[in-house]
Image (cartoon, rainbow, N blue to C red; front, side, top):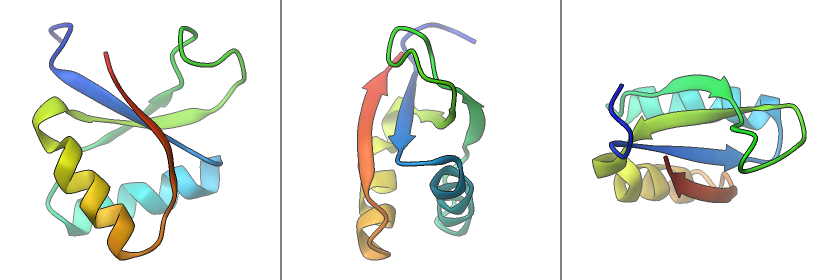
Length: 75
């Protein structure tokens, strides 16, 4: 995995992340559930890793179903 080609999407809870994974799959956006990187949060939890190029499509897919994003960070 090359640094800089991925982004992570932080959501409110693990259940939101699981729902988000399904939404992204339906939208044809590849994603992977990963632990939240320590540099972003000291709390335990999971987030969704996507390709940087898919950030706007992912944001639109979540907005379409009213799933609130806490943040998107490039890693």
